[in-house]
Length: 268
Picture 1 (cartoon, rainbow, N blue to C red):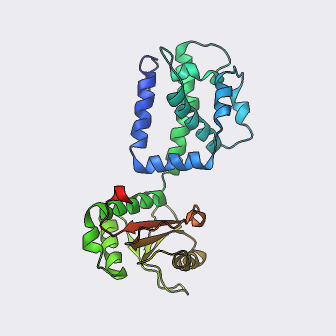
Picture 2 (picture 1 turned 90 degrees about the horizontal axis):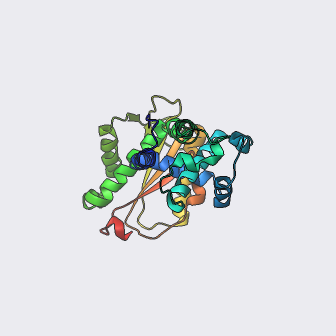
């Protein structure tokens, strides 16, 4: 993206986003950014058809995250709905410039005022606890595709050991915390760059029910109340029944379900 020529700008821009979206952690960050900042398409269409003399004034009542979300949604909208011909993303972004400047200025402004805020946001969100979510999701995929038959008969302790070995092989260090009044969590993962550890509570649940999940969440939240940190309720089950737990998830706590049955991931 360092070139100032417009010849390959669209292809290079699309290639950059494909590369970003190919990295699971980055893809998750962008999905959360869009989910947390809804940008109406009408707003994008209006902006595309209007000559704005100072685009930053449009966002002065919003934070940098909103602006990054807007730039991201603007890009996706252009890619899906607009016909370019010989025009570039920089040409389409009329709201960035006061006048019809030469193409080099347009490209530079496009990079600094559209691409850079998105990349900066991704970098700011790549934190160690997000990396742990990535490893937990990779382990889930590994089990559901390849090792489910080896783990189906294991008890919770056996599942803990298997997950512990996988996380250890990824370079994570973890320990048990014995001084909690409600017992001890299964894993407390040490985040070297953060003073808040990451707690993983493992449950093997035969039949998923709202009551059982609520009980498990209460136990995990009790740990988090005493030991401020991030946490994940990690459930192993052969039950394919869907239980909506979206309201229980926030920026400190999440839930993962690992299926141990014989259905393929595409059948779940």
